[in-house]
Length: 207
Length: 207
Image 1: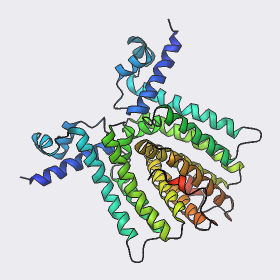
Image 2: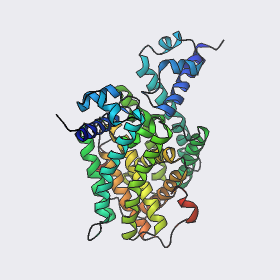
Image 3: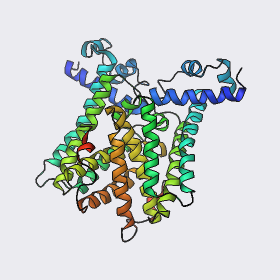
Image 4: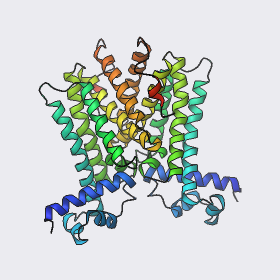
C-alpha cells in the first residue's frame, strides 16, 4: 500500500503528465486517478478545491523542477554563464520532448492556453516568473545591465515556450536549437551594448 | 437569412474565437453553433469531417489573416524593414490581446497544446511556417544572411508566441514589448555578424 503522501504526489505527477499531453480541458479527473493508480476518494481527500487546486499543484510542481535546476546554475561556484544556462534549458526540454515522442509540452503553457480561472492563471504567472528570476541573475552576473538582463530572461522564457510549440507541431527539435543559437547572439549583443536600452523604469512594470 | 457561405465563414470565425479563449478541448461544437448563430445542421453540412475539420479551418483562417499582413509588408515598395515588421506584429497581437481583455491568445498555439490529431498538428505547423516564410524574406532583404534570416524568423515566431502566454498569464503587454526590443537588437547583431553562424545545412532540417 502506498503511503498517503505518495498517493498525493503520484496524483500531481499524473495530472502534470496528462495536462502536458492533452491540455487542461482535455484532462479528466477520472483519467488522472486512473493514471496515478490511486483510489478515487483520494482525489477529494487531497484536493478539496477540486480540479483547479490539482491543476495549480501540477503547474507549481512542474515549474519547480526547472526552477531548481536554474537556481543550481545561478548559485554555482563559479556561477553559470548565459551559454551554459541556455544549453542546460535546451537539453532539459529536448529530453522532455523526446521522452514523449513530441506528444507533450510545457504544463504551464497548456494551462494558460485553456483559459482557466484566476487562481490557475496566477499560478502560471508565478511559474514563468520563477524561471525568469534566476535567468535574470545569471545574465546580470554574465555582464548584462539589469534592465537588459530582465528583458533577456523574459525573451528566453518566451522563445523557449514558443519553440516548444513549433517543435511539437513539426516533430523536430530544430526550433529549440535555433532559439539556443539566437539567444546566445542576443546575450553577446546586449553585453556589448553601450548602455541599457530604452527607459528602464517602464520596462519592469510586470514584476 | 444569411447565405450558405456566410454561415460557413461565421462558423469558422466563431470556432477560432472560442479556441483562442478556451482551447480546442474546451470548445464544444454546440458552443460554436450557438456563437455563430447558425442552424445545428449546417455544421455537418459544411464540415463533414467533424470537429477536426472545423479546427483545421479555424487554424488556417486565423493564420492567413496575419500571413496576409506579413506578405503585404514583405512585398511593399520599399520592402518593410525588420523594425517595421516587428512593430506591426506587436501591434497586431496587442490589439488582439486588448480586444479580449487578455482572455484569449493564439489559435495555433491553443491547437498545438491540446494534443490534437496528426491532421490538425500539420495545419498548425503550416500556420507557423506561413509566418516564418515572409519574416525570413524581410530579414534577408534587411541584410541578414539566409541561414541567420531563417533562424531569426523562427525565433521571432517562437518569442512572440511565448510572449502571448506570458501576457495572458500576467495580464500585461510588457512581454510583447520586451520581445520587440530584444528581437530588434538580435537582428542588428546578426546583420553585423561577420558570417553565417554554425553549419548552414543542418540548421534547416525542419523545412
